Length: 129
Image (tube, rainbow, N blue to C red; front, top):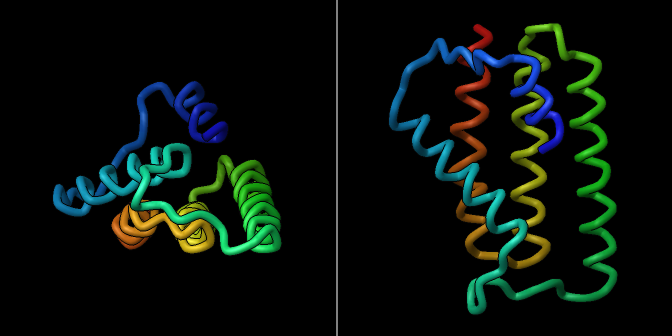
């Protein structure tokens, strides 16, 4: 979230979406809010926890690596508008949310990430093209 807050502060006019597809945009926002929410809130009966302590450790390690990779690419490519930047900064969080949902066995997080990932990647790609 920190890179997104920094972006919002530095770019007060927001994000200029050049590709207008309301269905995909709504799907992305629903998925995004779901991913953020279900990474924090676990609703009983939809979240089954980690299989083992080792699984939890793998979850923490992989999520940490993905977050650090995201932040590094975001810092390095902040002023560059390229396909690499757009795809990297959309694929990495998509992988993070989906991986987290699978590892924590959170049905709602998996559903939200399946909504978020393709729509976020397509919007990011279309806005660079």
